[in-house]
Length: 383
Image (cartoon, one colour):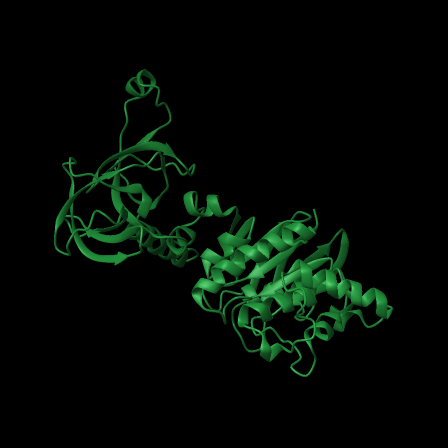
């Protein structure tokens, strides 16, 4: 294991809750990680702690087996050999590109430094730009130079704080893929903070979802999308809804007979869903649950007996993202090829194509259970 963060907690003065609360994560050598979450979720505080810019009140940070933080040890930021790329590029406007890249190589012989700078310029696709100044470059080119400057001293770990947020949408997507290619070619281990989950998916091998200082899930982008571990992760990631349903009692002989042993059935307003439960969360028969349905789980099918009304449509070139309302008012999202152009208010047939069922106790039952638990705890010790 290369980067290990164990039970890390960070608190700020005069703030009642922890900015980072008992967070643990790991990165393998050469692995790219990303932290996403709403504003104030603690992702930047965690990044700054790894960099050595923020002290932790509890927990440990290890890099390549060496303690950076914890157990009475705190290595200064400048001694950690960690590179950083910021959202505002932080280039020196009075220095040309070559001098910016070579800024962290001042202890190196001039000839060797020039070789490293030339190699970095070639790596980021800007050979021949060493004599230009930052104001002569586009935003995307400036970010490439910032990346080259961070990589030039060969840091053990690279941290990126909202590296594409100041760029336009099209450039962000293209540069995210380019940055991943560059980091993979150099074998760099990196951890990025972003508010854009598509950027995280484009760059990272593993993504963490943070909420109120806690790490809800640390997993592959695919698993986060299709196998969210918590209700918040399910709701935060991707296009989807949590559809109300009822967990049905199943017949064991029938399950064995049709080869679907272990499957569960959930009755919803859009039909009966049958599949393997993703989470091992036993629920009694007839329990009210919420089922995660992604936009790509809801198929347009004119032959289906289940209909939904188009209440909103968003054109995305090759497809429409439809917001659909069922007869009982519950809403779904559906991605439909754009040649299926339906008008708002039109009723269309839909079919659910789900194999693994991601279910959570319904919000109503969760609130009722919490209230019951609170009442029970309040009664402890009373007569």
